[in-house]
Length: 314
Picture (cartoon, one colour):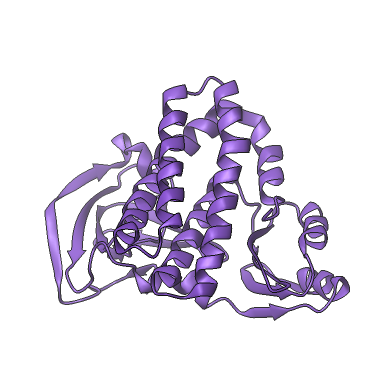
């Protein structure tokens, strides 16, 4: 599935309500933040006047596309996008469509691309891994496998990368460690990193719900690490900066729901629960919680982002 399409993605598109006009002068804050259409929903953006630049949180950094007056795009479900720039006279409409050829509360196979399409990298020792990390060019990603814990070597490379290198540990099984490595053209901020972490959890979930034991292990590792990041790093800093305790309590309740559904992943009812709770939870965090958190902590965000990215899977 592409991040966007110039033509309708299928012949089974059904409009959900009417498109709403938006203008540069009164643009809703959510359009400048990473967000994604969920389930089987596509968003159709049509630019009536002016110019507009869209960004996607791609598989290895941000991608951008400019639109001129009269142009349109279909924006794919599960792919995080935002408006990077609008001309002062810009006016566009956004309409949501359901793709009835896809079951809304079933795993969306195309979301697995973030993991499935990543080029593989095998490193036999720390020296080979250090060289591979040095050779990783901006815009590239690798699905790493090593017979040793790569965390010390990766952390050294992270410290020397100027914020352009990130990793997402996938855990270890039978002595083999796995992780996704991403080299971006620009330093990665916390919204970018946690948004991609959400997308990776969703990608692993597709395989796990399809019965892939390896993807289920990755899902458990990714989700456990992500929840620890929030509970041990983000929530305490959010509260210390004056964040709403009720917001944190609600998110922690959702964390327990996710853990409960994952513990019962063999139960079909938990399949649906995982899909629905995870999508709503991710959207709430990306739209409301993370932006509020970053606004509160200000200049401390860079150091916290570096510490979070450097976390291992344990």
